Image 1 (cartoon, rainbow, N blue to C red):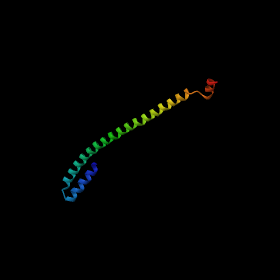
Image 2: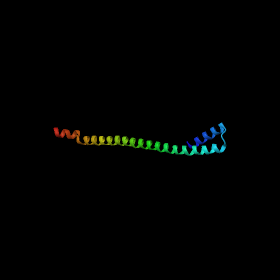
Image 3: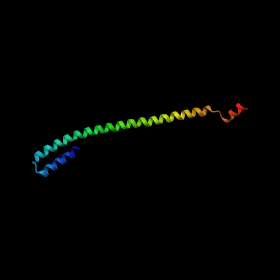
Image 4: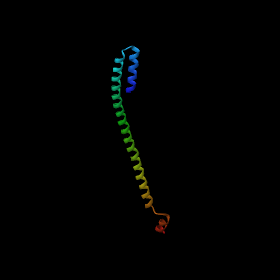
Length: 92
């Protein structure tokens, strides 16, 4: 953002006919100001992305844990059911 502000300020100053020292001083101030603004916006964007990543990771891990628990429950139920041979021995 800083370089864009520098370029726009320089071109606008040249277009209007402002003296070169004034153009450069204003362009440097615009460069510094917009570098700081870009840093702040970048930090905010990074925080938003990290928060989204953490939330999504919790959702995915939560679903995974639920599936693993359901698979364990189904394995326990399958182990608890008697095999056909065991069922015939009990009946017969």
